[in-house]
Image (cartoon, rainbow, N blue to C red; front, side, top):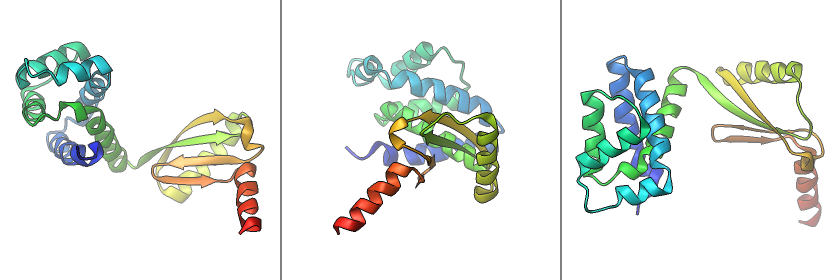
Length: 178
């Protein structure tokens, strides 16, 4: 089967364009996220692959499990996914929809892994520098990994910046053994 992100991309783009045109971006974002979470559960995947249920019934069940209210356009969108056998890619559709929304709103989630806990001042300084460099509003999520020895690893979208001491030592080791 084709890569799920490739399959999901046109659906996410179509949903995003519609939501922007109709000014329902936030509500579509909310229900897509919730439905994506429901569909990601293994039991839901089994349900969606059942040949005993038609596309409309599968959509009804997923919407009911997610406990969301959707409009007619959303129901048509989901039914189209169901008829094409693509309800299983809803988690990826939701993820790509959120990526498009973040791009439009000029914001980005940055994951910071550091050797030690970063205090608020350090996080704010880092966010300010990243905002200046990326020209985006920055939201930082931190994680501590003592194995880094020192420094940080930043993940922003597809970009990874390894400024850790462990990373530097690994690169030095590779250079010396080459």
